[in-house]
Structure formats: C-alpha cells, structure tokens
Length: 137
Image 1 (cartoon, rainbow, N blue to C red):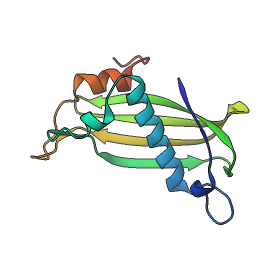
Image 2: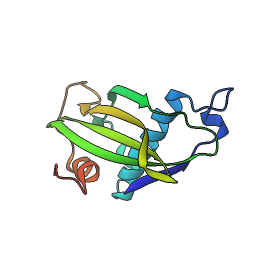
Image 3: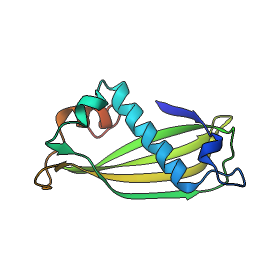
Image 4: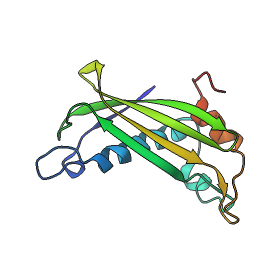
C-alpha cells in the first residue's frame, strides 16, 4: 500500500522546489499513516510513558526536483534490524510516472523505555503495524 500526497507550497523553498526536510517529514507522515491503517491509536500509543520510538538516523536522496502541485506516491519497505530497532526505506514516485523513482529516504527507529532511556523490545502492535504485508514478520 502506498501513501499519496500532493506537494504543497509550504513544503517548498522560494524557488518552488521541495525542501529536503519537508520530504523527510512527508515520509514520516507515510509511516504514521501505516500505523493508523494498522489500528494503532497514535494519541494513546505515543502518550505511553514507558515506550518511545525515536528516529536515530535519517537520510534522503533526490534524483530529480519535486515542485508545488506534484502528486507523489511513497512506498514503505520496513526492515528489522534486531529486537529493538528497525529501519524504513521510502521509495518516492510521481503519481503519473509510477515506474520512475524520483527520491528515496530511510529512517532508523529504536525502541526505548522513555523513563530509563534503555533499549527495549518493540511492542507487538508496532511489529505488526510496521511489518504487515512484508516478509519480516
């Protein structure tokens, strides 16, 4: 399942080209949408005082510019790293050219106890949400 989004003026710089941090933010929207579509109540889950899933690494590569008004599709490809961390690879395409990748991004997430800051195993609902429809369940 892909996440669809139109690039908005607020996502772009003065030249009307998407700002790199904006596309990373849009990728995070796609991740949040995946959690929502899996039945995770974001408000409840992220208010949990015992569990946090900070992003510890992010990167993005552009193969062509994106402009205000462009419609994109983002495919999420999750990969487990170990019992407490995973990464998500994002493949970004223009909706009208689904065979031509225009950007790619990656985020690495680590599950921690938000009070002790110690690593802990990913909760089962997150594993199910992140790795649903993948070979890594």
